Image (cartoon, rainbow, N blue to C red):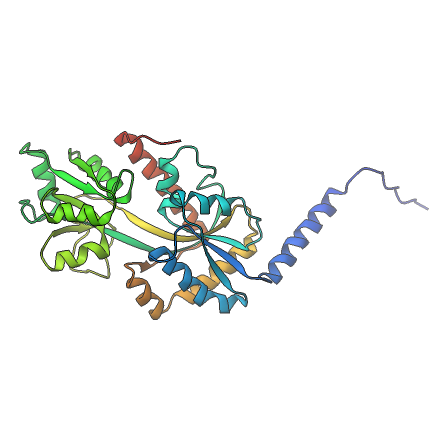
Length: 330
C-alpha cells in the first residue's frame, strides 16, 4: 500500500496559490460594483470635461447599480488627478476621466511627471472628441489651406499666429502645421483663448487654431475666415467646413480626446463590464445632443483601441514638441 507523500513545511503549492488568486479575482469581478465609484475629474467644476463626467454618472450609474460620483481634482495641468488614479487600488472603484492634458500632451511637455501615461493606466473606453478650427483674419489673402501654405512660402512677410499659451493645443497644433507644411510662422502666445481670439479679430495676428465653439460664431458672422477643421472627418456641427486634411495638408489631425481609464492591472473582467455599460448607455440620441452642445462628438471604443490611440498620440505629440524645440520642463 502506497503512502501519501508528506507535506514539506515551508514549501508553498504554487498552483494552489494561483488558483486561489484567480478565484478571488473572479469573485470580486462578479460582485463588482458593491459600493460607489469615484470618477476623478482633472478640472474644476464647469466646462466640457466636468459636463462629460456628470453625464457618465447620470447614464451609467443605474446600469451598475451603484453611484458614479464625479470628484473634481484640478491643478498642475491634470497631473494631480492622474497621479491620484495611477496610485489608487486596482479594484475599479477609482477611475479617471482622461483628456489630452492628462494622458497625452501634458506628460509629453513635462518630463518628470510621477506617472507614465501609457503604462500606469488600464484603458476602458473613449468617450468623445473635440476638433479645433484653423481660422484667419479676413485681410489675409487666403481662402484655403493651400493658399496659406503658398503665401507663407512666398517670402512676402512674416505671418503671425496667436495661441492660448506655450504648449497648449492651439500652439502645438500650429507647430504640427508648420512641420507638415514646411513653413515658418511666428508664434504670439496669449494667456487664454479670449485674448488670443481678440488679437486675431483686431488684426494684430493673422492665423489661429481656435476652440471650435468659440470660433464657429465668429465664422458665421464673417469676422474670421475658416480654412478647415482639425479632425480627419468633417464635424457634424459644421458639415460645410472642410477638414485641413482635405483642404491641402494630408494627414493633419488635432483633437481633444475624452476617455475613461483605471489604474493599471485593474482586473480585465471589471474593465470589460465598465466598457460594456458605457457603450450601451451613452450611444443614444439625447447623449449625442448634450455632448454636441459642448462641442463634443460622441466616440466610443474598446479598451484595446483606446490603449493603442493613447500610445500613438503620446508618441506623435512628443515628436512634435521635440522637433519644435519646445523646452520640456521638469
